[in-house]
Image (cartoon, helix red, strand yellow):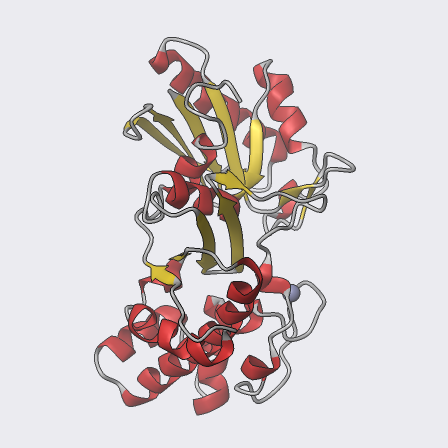
Amino acid sequence: MRIGIDLGGTKIEGILLADDGSIVEKIRKPTPALDYVATVSTVCEIVRTLQDKSGTQVSVGVGTPGALSLSTGLMKNSNSVRLIGRPLQHDIEALLGFEVRLENDANCFALSEAHLGAAKHADSVFGVILGTGTGGGIVIHKKLVKGPNSISGEWGHNSLPCSARELVKADRQCYCGRINCIETVLSGRGLSATYREQYDENKSAADIAQLAQQGDAAATACIEMYCQQLARCLATVVNIVDPDMIVLGGGLSNIPQLYIAVIDLMRPYVFTDDLQTILSRPSFGDASGALGAACLWPTNAAE
Ligand SMILES: [Zn+2]
């Protein structure tokens, strides 16, 4: 068995995962607001409860927004500001008294789908989060691709390719300090901004998606535009990684039009005459973070 923890901005979820991929136990607690020390101790409390349930010390993986800097051991790039600059992995290990593995939540999403979900039969997977932010993770032969900067798969902060930029009227400022990052178009806020740009009206991404489902012409056109933007941005990933499968996750992955339109819209922008890439819905909803975190360790803990 393995333990996976999803440390999110509002909740901390822990699961005890059996070797056959079934969830034996699940615990969910609210994330202590703006309190780093309490956050670390809540994570450790959940781990201890799950360890007791398993009856033995099992491996622990933790998924969280942001990344651990390999040079400093401190958290960076996290939208949970309480974690930035903190030695999160070190503090969890110090409190538990044994080694844990810690990964970016988009990487955990990609791992969960590659090991247990939609991409379990695929050799290479690009897992994409389309939600509050736009992130991603790459898994090749069931292993997460990791680099010296801990940013592999973070395509959300690439500049929009020219083919997607031309679909946006005005420059968009990203929170990261850059202009026209992919996230400014493909995140939930990005979809809202596109609607506002087209119709001078504020609507949430969820409302736009729902209106499009009901046949509203303006919302449908906005979703069609989003499909075009997503296709042109994904084409650049396919030209570099050429994954067998792209699995979408996050709130916007529920938009059904994506799975009908995007692959065909990618064709003119991918350097091949016969696009074989599969675009898939995710197998797991909220549970993917904790599942992927558990998969940071092999089932026999031998690697
Ligand atoms: Zn950015």
